Length: 302
Image (cartoon, rainbow, N blue to C red; front, side, top):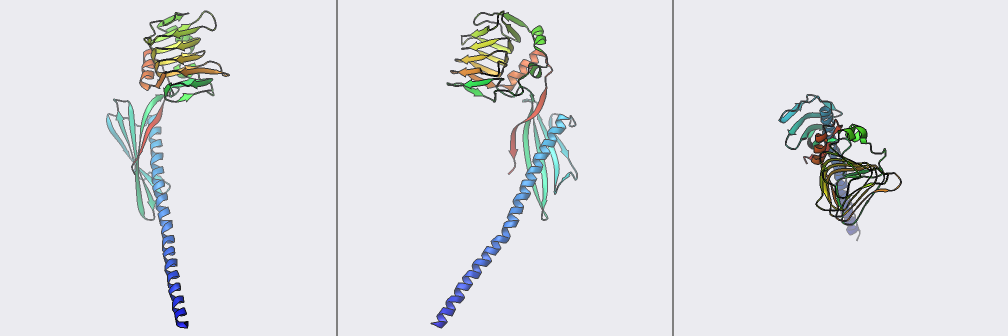
């Protein structure tokens, strides 16, 4: 009986020893795994910093882009324990975008971890990056479809001069079309159109699906659309009501007040942020507007 007990104790001790050694081995592996993961994250972070640096170069015009691929290769561009190896700029004149590709390396326990990131960037108007802007509230309901960002209760309030680079009076002076107290469904809304009213509370009214407009439309008052379509930029100083089968491509701005719902978008209305329509509207007016470089998509080489 005593011999059996001693054998049993030895067996249990051996099992415990094997378990402890196994746990110790796994414990020793964890720091290496964690360190490797941190190194990969650091390499990725370096690539991200390199893309931001590349965007700064484009903003500062320190990079001269030619058609196709332009590469900047760096020697000993050290950042912490890593290096930025190179930045590529690939211009696409067809769709006016630039791809920035960054390559970075990070040193970890004698091992070199490399990573590649890329971002597609585009010059966009500083104050035209959403489908609808309003100083007051925005009500969207029914089957309305809005594609793009909505900016309600803008703070600071949206500014006509920030967007267009000129005052309202200057815009009125260069407008191609002037309407005062227009009838329902007025025609001829092309290029730059200025709409005003003799009395306060006047409203531009569109009720037919066949109505069309394009360019820049400034309504010095309220606007109501129960049909129609417009490509470009609309600026409404009062309130905007949209209800029906409409299509608006570009951007919509509503000054209104700041204490009530300025914008109501109901029914089957469709408002789509369209950069091409916005740029076309600015081009027609030959306006000197502000642009900034924005990332529109991001890719990682896993």
